[in-house]
Image (cartoon, rainbow, N blue to C red):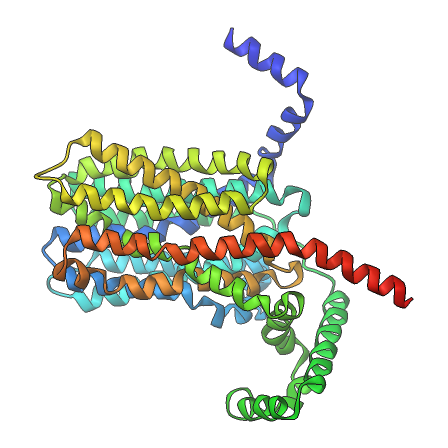
Length: 489
């Protein structure tokens, strides 16, 4: 009966049938598998690693400092122009620009995980840190190339399906690297867990070999847009007051070289390094600083608390299997539900309202962790499941809305570099502050730590409201400008 009803629904709603068929296309299937390869290393140098370190007796203050390994994801914008334009020898000729860089990142991830599996944190903590840094650097490099691959593989009509498939693959990888690694560690040991994760990266490599290299944009389009952007930059510079021009030239003399030499850089270097940033600021004006501040602060609350989540569960007395079953496995489905719910909300209300809802929920759920920390003894598994459900539901809504917002802000001609800028900014403050999380917990306690993490989410809520107001005023400003141009004409 259920099957008949489902078939009837598809017959009456042909648009639904067509939408579902999109997810069977090769580029969409490929990006879900590559998204799995992108998500797998993240937890292995973040919360899973902190669980390993705490389980073997490493001090919490030292565990907190390991959060700085994740800063690599936040500074990938500095080498994104190289990934965007430099053609790798041998691999580049065989696989193409995007796939060659993705493969290089995958090989680095696998090598780093294998190295970690052979080390004992109590005997070689610095070795673990170096290997984790290799994994994080290779993973962030893969992300830069993969973002460009995802956007260049299909036209705009399929970008929504590509993003959804990528997020699904990424979330499945988080489940494997979280719950899967904890189950293996509980059944065998941590060395075996990390060795297994290195082997699983081979699946992403096979998917990459199956993938097709996307067609790259016409070179003339880049040249034309670069010239327009640089002309606008020179015009803007000439319109500045004398003291501002002097200050700009002084800064460029010692930071970037003489301003007048910008137009004489090699065309590829100009396009890769200068134009993406000039285009973003030209398009958004001074409000670009507000946008960048919002991107930097939106995830600061959940990133800050995330590094201490697994140590918190272990210190409460939960076993690794209980954590894997509830915090990872059960939480995974709540995250997927939150993402699906957010997709519906975005269609119904646009991006900004779900973005505000996600910001409020992320900050509020930290208070639930604070209440859990104040309980006497080990809380029940039901209470843990409720808190985890709320946390992952809010995370699914917030992350999906945030990815949609970042995608809307990137120019298609400079997606790799601009998206790297956005994704770097969205994690940098949180990664830096989370490095002190163990120190705060040791000094104050878990309840106070999660309360502070909740307070850190307030600026993001305020900035979402500012962005919503700006979006409401922008159409009116555009209409006013159109009237002025018509009168002038």
